[in-house]
Length: 451
Image 1 (cartoon, rainbow, N blue to C red):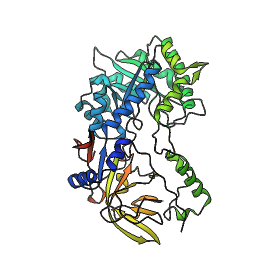
Image 2: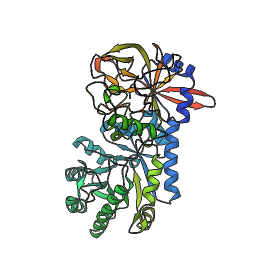
Image 3: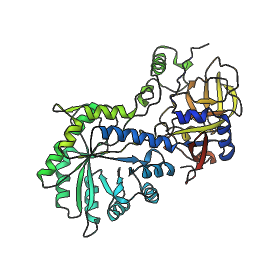
Image 4: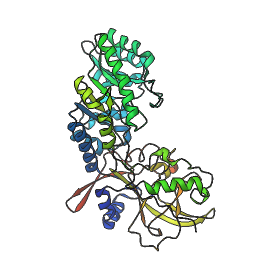
């Protein structure tokens, strides 16, 4: 018998309440089918309030823009709008959804590469354009409506600090002077500020990027422009586990033990920490560390206040952290390739991005099987060898049986939508919003099936 390496997932109290109510879980699957994504707008509201509380405590003028790309749920959009957040959109479809959800154009920011058609809509509506390239600035200037100006942020990249990850996005610092000149000369553009987005949660890297961005703000003022915003993007991490020690033991076992006992043949999970599943610190800690870090011996929060700059954030993962789970029925159990395999009414691409692995164990809802002696691998329903929901052995609290329900915890951030498809004729799972009212849950369908 191989060693057990369970990776228990942290559970928000609302999610834990639902998973502890087998009748409610059975009822939602009977009503909406398997598989199904369940989102918790109330948890999103808590996350937004927690981030806002940190910013308020440090008296930093701020705006929070929900990164809609993290989850296509219209219920999340509605919650963000009700909470007074802005929204960050990255496509024409997301812009349509934001407008339909009630966001005014001045509460919308458009990021990422943009088509000419999207640029024209942004300019016509007065949406803030987070410019990714000099080409976008030229296009915005060309289509800006006469008598008005389009608010723009310059997304920066190419930072000198070795701590700041390289990025394919943004305007290289070497081209910043040309970008500022474009804005200065264009009658239809208004420089609202500068922006960056880092693929790291390291507060030191974010401070280094901010420090270099402040030189661009100074250069803009030198050209007669009046930027008032510094947008530090998103990238705030999720909290997947309560205790990082099991994950650390698992990582060590992959490196030192026989990995074929833990990983399906043909796959390599030698560096699972790349997906940050071992993190147990909330996003509020990362934000707190950033605001209290120092620039020239003064806290970041103090520098922003003194420079009269408004801090913009574009969190996605941090806002929907623990705000969703995915439920799927167990079809059957079998032996394959000398290993125990549990086939689930779900496809891999509907519960995780294609290039990642779910590195916490799912929850077996109301499992009544025997105590497990070994772990199992989870297979999807597509007729593809690659459709393994779990390429790593998972360890459940009891032996799964046909008809049991598996719950994949904390799937709201990208896992539901990023790689979802209708392969094999299986539509993406529908989304349902769950609201805890007193002692009972109310389930409300999302407005768009499978989104």
